[in-house]
Length: 167
Ligand code: FES
Image 1 (cartoon, rainbow, N blue to C red):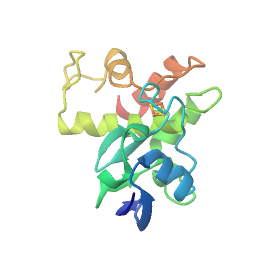
Image 2: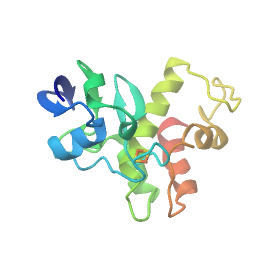
Image 3: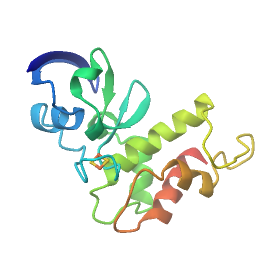
C-alpha cells in the first residue's frame, strides 16, 4: 500500500506518496536524494543512519517514513549554513574525527543531538556532574555516543571533537 507523508526536511516542506513500508532512511536517500545519511547495517546496530527528528536523534533505518507526518527532520545536509560548516562539522575536521568517513554524518548528527540532550537535562547512564567543567566528560561522551559505531576506530578523535564543542 502507498501512503502520503508530509514533513519538513532541512527546513523544506516535502510531500510524497510512498510505499508504507519505506523507512525514513530510504525516503531520505532514495526519494529525496539526500545521500549524506548512510546505510550501514539497516537494522539499528551501527548508527550510520542517525538523523535528528523534532530535536531527537533516531536511527532512520528503524523508522517508517509514514510515522513522521508533520515532523521536522534534520540530516547532515541541513546542519550547516550555505558556505559555513556547523561548529560540530568544523570540530570533526579539526580533530580528524574520522578515517573512511562513512559513519561521520551519523556521528555528527548524533553529537549535535547529544549536546541538545544535555542542555535539556536528559540523563545518560554514566554519572556526570553537569555543572562541572568540562560539560561532558570523555566517559560520558563515549556513553552517549555508544550507538554510533566507527569501524576505523576514530573514537578518541571523535571524543576530542565533541569535547571542543560541548566541553
Ligand atoms: Fe541504521 Fe545501521 S543503518 S543503525
